[in-house]
Amino acid sequence: MLQIWPLRGIPEVTAQSDLVALIADAAGDTLADGDILVVTSKIVSKAEGRMIAADDREDAITAETVRVVASRTSESGHTTRIVENKLGIVAAAAGVDASNTPQGTVLLLPVDPDASAREIATGLRARLGVRVGVIVSDTLGRAWREGQTDAAIGAAGVHVFEDLRGATDAEGRPLVVTMPCVADELAAATDLVKGKATRLPVAVVRGRADLVGDLDLPGARSIVRDPERDMFHRGADEAYADGFAAGAASVTGR
Amino acid sequence: MLQIWPLRGIPEVTAQSDLVALIADAAGDTLADGDILVVTSKIVSKAEGRMIAADDREDAITAETVRVVASRTSESGHTTRIVENKLGIVAAAAGVDASNTPQGTVLLLPVDPDASAREIATGLRARLGVRVGVIVSDTLGRAWREGQTDAAIGAAGVHVFEDLRGATDAEGRPLVVTMPCVADELAAATDLVKGKATRLPVAVVRGRADLVGDLDLPGARSIVRDPERDMFHRGADEAYADGFAAGAASVTGR
Image (cartoon, rainbow over all chains, first blue to last red):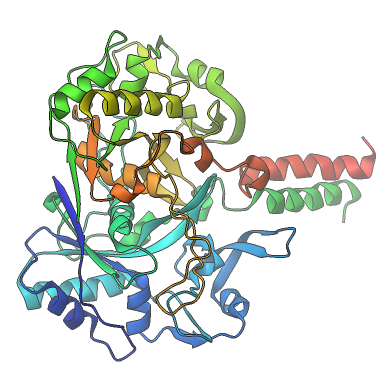
């Protein structure tokens, strides 16, 4: 059985906050070996001072954008930009966040969420004496499906994939699905208890102790697909336009 | 707190199986109002006789393909086809499944997973006298991220989205993320207890009774994005090739 619950009593996080202390205080002695904590990236960003003044959120998005993947403007004039950000993550608005942050500011994602996860996991293991894993989560949209789900953008001490390559099914046949991304599934599961409009930025998952491991396991960066291997590294309209220009040039020689 | 556990004792499902009976028997009297059952699409397919002989799985994929979205052949000669299938779902191999089905056969997805979910939910509500929701789940890959996660391809009696449009955050500002796809998050969460190589095709989620509703709520079909609204309705290479041909033709007039 899996049990998932939010940690209560975590106060408003600021750039002076010691996240390990806040989480440890809220957890008390309720954590056990094999527990996995999923920490919303928002509070990691706040604790790391990643709040910037942004009267124009769009400028912040542009600054965080490494590569525009796709862009579309609705009839109402709203532009959605799907970009690859400095973490290699493809998401709308480069992950720049205008919710749950004071008016006139926006939150950038943590500079290195895997390192942040490792710092929190190291600190909690030392302070509480329990072997826990830590995931840093963010809310992401996705291709082909409406709505958003939470996913892992940082991880430490947790296997981010369950590696079933070479495993067989109940009838001895090789499994076709071989790489469940359990880190993303853990993040999605905790979104069900954290809510969006409430101050419950940390949740615990108990019941998959087999997924907790050493702190030097690969982080969530390993989930990001290399653009060279990605069939959707560019939006359809953008790729079409690129092709069109190349096609015309190929004929005219320009 | 969320509790998630697999139902044990569900035997091998065949085309003669009464899924409602099998699930009800396995559940006994352990279910309560507000519980959400997540049923792996495999057993729904088996119960609906969606097993076909397929010495060549590729033929089955072609038959289920409405539209090829993208395709890539690796150096080893393995071709991955991302296609839109008859359910409108964009996924590798059209959802045709060669695992956990007897040798020489493949499983097609259910014809109408929302209807299947509704049938199961209706039957369980009547038989067990508890107001439960039902999700039919499948394992899907995704753009930009390695690995697979479970998602909802059918749903009944469950809100598939948490509609937060117009809601505000803790500081009274409008939320930016407004459509958490809770059905996909529920499916992902249960994958953590079901496993891939074990016979645990049904799991229960308890703790989000607020997501359970009437049986005529929109199903999982509402999660599928209309290709016209999808910036990734076509793979980058395919769109580029389309554009190239059009660009060349625009100059030559052919």
